[in-house]
Length: 264
Image 1 (cartoon, rainbow, N blue to C red):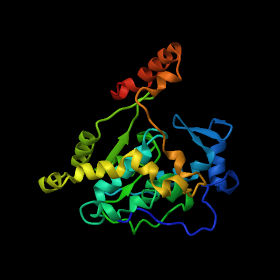
Image 2 (image 1 turned 90 degrees about the vertical axis):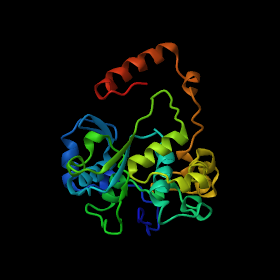
Image 3 (image 1 turned 135 degrees about the vertical axis):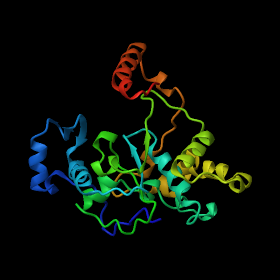
């Protein structure tokens, strides 16, 4: 499955600067509530330089029933789960040897680019023919902002939601359930060969953050790959939040998430 394309541009691709937006997009942004470099669209604050890709993605993307969409908001574990998804979906036929895996020399964001912030932001109607089934895409959007074609299809959506204060998951249990959902469950032979553990080691934050490509590389937006990795300690938030702020956050979380049944 082809899930990434390399940019031949001689300079880092920094998305669309405001002066590079189309007039149509500028006019649309001018109709929205704005603050600094952000605009409020359907209840979400989005950097104005991202809006062209978001609108093009919503307008032109045609979902296939076999697609897999990995939708996240920023700073919830996107880099880590991109690595797991790419490895799970591609392990059967394309990247079998974990010693020669592309994750060892490529950042997860290169292997699984943002479909809205990169592909559709760079070109209003990008060429998606190289993406063979099952196509794997990563929109950096909430479910309500996904294209209608996605919601009308039977494609699979993996939505990662993190406790705003902290998060902790059992990796092995999570991988097994995720593989079942994606339709690529682990076989008894794979269990016997320790494939689940191999994927856990390959996609662990410790391994990914220590790879040379992630310590020294820079993405097309000019951001260092190292910025995508952090320690992620369980309950590390207690070192930063006062009891009063925790109480306020808990009330806000309950208010925002109760309608969709998420509890932390």
